[in-house]
Length: 153
Image (tube, rainbow, N blue to C red; front, side, top):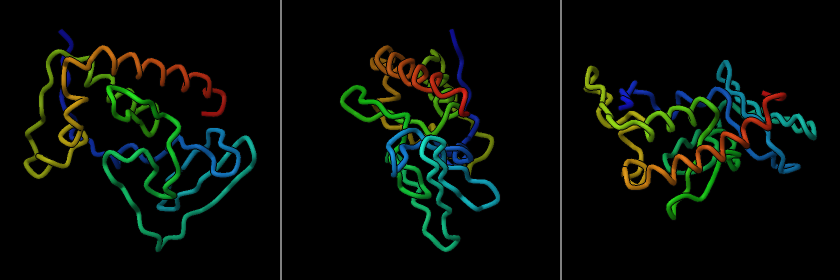
């Protein structure tokens, strides 16, 4: 039986490199958030935009948009009548590890993280074991989309 132990990661822990749809050409682009200077870069059309430091960051759970520019995410799929999304390969893998596990354990070493971790904020439909097969199939489809981008990663 696979075991998943919550690492108390937050959605923000996956924001260093976010795959989005370019607002200019609709091809995959990256939001790179390094040194508190988020930049949206498209390797297809050359689109390049830097976020102003005083702009509001809208990191909302359950919204398939990046928190810096509010652009649509690339890794998105309809699943179980809901929207499954991931910021990047690491986020997708974390979700896959959680969904595929038969034993899911919460990390209670830090009481302040009780309701802040990504796992604690996942919607019930992702936590429901009856949806496991469909969710894992959709994750596999998103992994295939991701594999097509590897030369640009």
